[in-house]
Length: 309
Picture: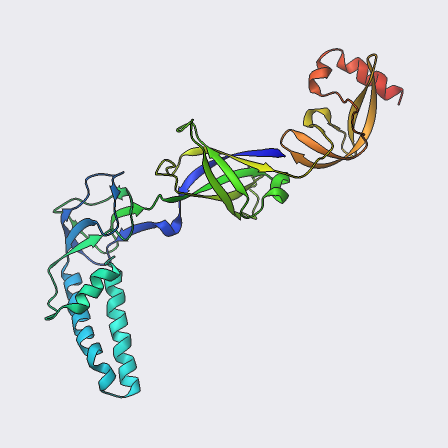
């Protein structure tokens, strides 16, 4: 068993973010939240707004509901199809205002179906307020951002691995996550996606690690460390620093005792952390020298070994 370590950063899941964008103009009546970073529960009121355009959309929906409710009993199949399409279109326009399905269902139940002049925008899920772009009493226009909500009950971690480690990165492989922000805690995740595109600047491969239930402790933009433990059976290996690449061949120096070194061609396999797998050229139990051993009289030993080879 050996470990692969990589640095990474935390991101919120794309599907777990909600950016509230106004589809038309209006004004903010009140806020149900006070600041960025505040935790909210599903269906909690985030803000109350007034919009003449939204009022018109509600009127259109009320009329579409009234027509839709009697359509199965009257008209041709084509006419009924058009009525159903108009009903769905009116409903979709309300969804653009981030009205929840429960709110729209309540609109369908109105006995008189008289739209309200103010509407509460509620949280579609439990999460954390990431950005607030409006204030009570302020007007907004079509396309303006009102606020952003993020669900942090599950997060992504994008970690950078060396390209030679790519064959070891498998979907659902368990990963241990640590961070200096919580030095005494470990979080658990699994590899979900391996990005097939190599980063040309760092020559690394990114892998997405999904972490469930981090208890709001892993926040977007936080730096973390990822560690994978891999059981690849027993392999003959030498330290990376023991290998001298010459271009065409890779050489290690076997310690024969008495200060004598024997150069040896080796065939390398995968790199596991600070070790190379040895395919051929060495036998188990042979001692090789690494860079630390070369600090003492290294040049003379190497030159003597190469001359006698």
